[in-house]
Length: 176
Image (tube, rainbow, N blue to C red):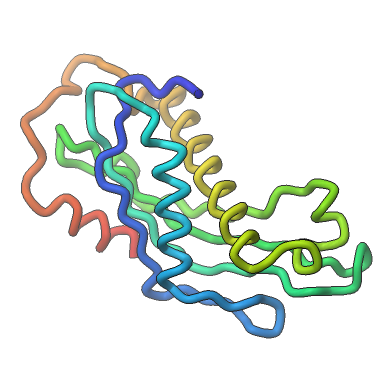
């Protein structure tokens, strides 16, 4: 586990109001499957952090591709997901990133994906693995921002009164 200072995951809000894909290159899954898979992967990765302060995620899934079967090796399509992430500081009641961070994440390349995961995995397995990669990319982003800007470190002026009501709703609105 990578250290993230005082970080503890509060709300984990994942939405997909404008998600896009194209049936010609992607297997299709429902918005509910997309959001549930990503929300579960985020919880799996971040619920282990037990810092002293809550931070909330607002995540909007903007697009995805779950690879279909293609010509092995030559045109083996890769799975991908595009998200926008907003991180909220509960104690201060503010967004840590003024503009949502857009992340584009690809499937992990390994022996099974060399011929294309469209051949070797079900859509559900592809979505699970891709969601885990997105959670990892979010963690990498948080580690980077913590190192650069001290997002989750105690410091002068960091502690503040409890966040106003409606932070979760605002996180959803900002993610979209």
